[in-house]
Length: 106
Image 1: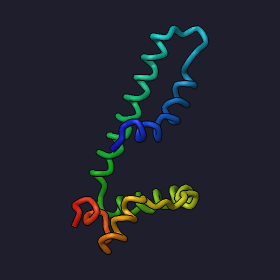
Image 2: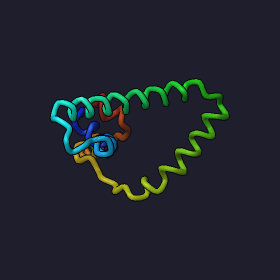
Image 3: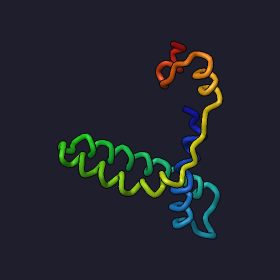
Image 4: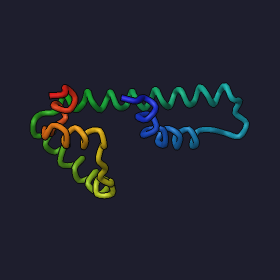
């Protein structure tokens, strides 16, 4: 996993929260502390949500999954399909498919 790429996915959310809290007369040091605090809060919230999910009953997990599916479907419809050229070459060369086969070279 490329950390910079992953961080770019969440950075807009953190930046919006920083913009809401920043003032014109804040010194750079205070702004850096604010950015750090927002990053830490984001990950603490993610961890809290994960812990809550682990405590769900089977019915609560089904309800959560359905709600997430409904919320993410419009976003997923906007995704463009891409093909990894290395994976495509692997399939062409070996006739095998599947991520496990590709990663292990089977």
